[in-house]
Length: 381
Image 1 (cartoon, rainbow, N blue to C red):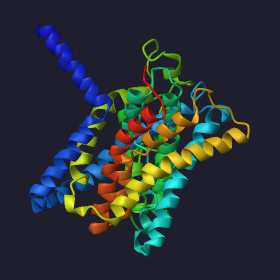
Image 2: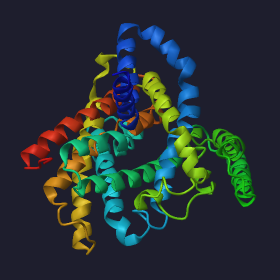
Image 3: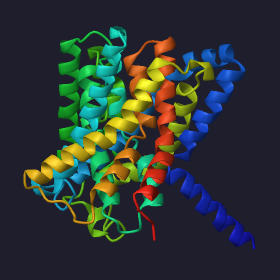
Image 4: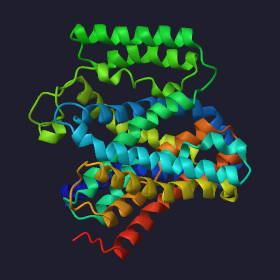
């Protein structure tokens, strides 16, 4: 009996970690705290936001970069143009349509000061979208890997958008180029010298990159993005061939293995620090963000996939338009990355609070995806 109890606890804990439910817990606590005592909550966030958003999230984006990078390795799902074309085009459409809807709506509303938030509805939360897809589609349905590929491409494009369009301050090329160049050179020296400890890549090149981005005006949470591909890694995608447990893991895989759980704790802190807004903050920006995500994602994904098919790119025959519409709505769950973009786009104030509510409420896109999927005849069994 005790053994059974420990096993059940382990399974539950693994499920919580695998599906980023600590982030949800942090967001729920933040909402309760902010609505119970906004002054105390504000003091807490002011004291902890920098540590969480600018330092802790370095490792969240590092793991996202690892997924993107490994997908491009030989044997990976994005390793060839033929394999990558349709999901990458779908990801582009799934970002362009929500951004366009957001920009058009803001323009029609006569609120040009809100235009800076155009990238917020571009985000897809890979963990929650994947979780929803697993509940909707049967095991082995091509919609699930397609959504994963789309979300990986979305992550890659999102990193570019964050770096280019949302600088953390005035752009300063001297420290940016100098320190980032030094970080890359040091990472290359470590790799050529056979250094396998990922800690040395974090504390050496990673730290230099962080300082360079911080002083250069780029968001420092991206510090490990250029360093991750420099770590020693296997020449092919181990997951695709199911070889993770049959070969000695390289530095990059050990990095993921060590940081996987701490990053979930960091996401708990991220939700706690960023998701606390008064429930009265629901306003125009809330509905624009939420609507752009839930409507724009499926429209963009379906249209670009249809165009790709007309251009001769192949997709699995089982991935019909009902499945595309459903997975498109599931991809409209922005949550983590959308919430991060709100903090990059707007200063503290009503617009930020309303945008955060829109990012949080996009979570209900999962329930909508389930309902639409059932209405379109999609059954899990």
